[in-house]
Image (cartoon, rainbow, N blue to C red):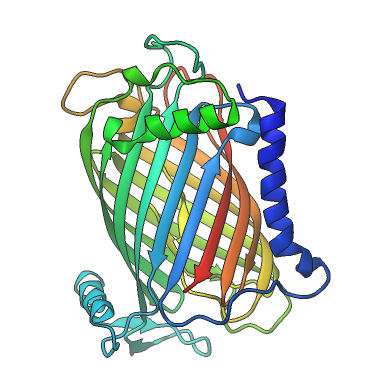
Length: 360
């Protein structure tokens, strides 16, 4: 278990970071960020952990580092961005229908396009970290290291994305070393069961998603507004195979539907795209449902014998939090809770998250 002193130090660190970025908002002035975007895209960092909940099990830690391109154009000065543009058009088509806010019937146009690249690490553990044996009625120790590339096309009030990921589950994910270092550094309980973790297995997954803007507009005047998006997605591979549906509700000052990339389960629901037109602050609530045929992290290795549990084929997740967005940066704090993912699981799986996006 995590001692109170360590939780206080970590909580104080995040609180100080949060106040440094958010306190000027309370005084009616936006935070000071670096000069405006240079057209090189966004750098995104995410951290998810259950450290503040006095528990350390299930999905216990996730680290994410990503880059989102600037809007891709055929005549970009960068040969790299032109290459990404060509890949985007091959996957998502060369033309899209933009819905006109005036008549709703739309006109033919190329739409906006992006590419997103990321690397993420996830850790998954049973509830009792002190046991060295295999815990027959709990999930296996598992680490995941995943690199991904996703292409996005925005067509007015719809947004489509295709992506794929390559990675590894097992000791090569370095999850064991990362968790042991963190626990040793902060004096937390030593996890003793990692020798029983899932064995090394390459993972290959592809995914597709589409979002629809149900309520809200990028062009609405300044003020307090709601926004609502609905999304559907699918994922296929030996890591996870299934379908996903999401509702994303927002309410706040200058809130806009926003552009996002829906990421593959089981890590991080989504990442934001380029900066919004106006500085905004809003509360959000996301409801996600997943129907799964396969989850390697629960059921165990695909090709060799390993510890695993019987999968619950349907589970949900509720995520809510606060977000600040500007042309230069975006900052989110959020809490999430997942329903039970395997048969015999005793508790839901809650955690907290921090997301920071900076224009390059």
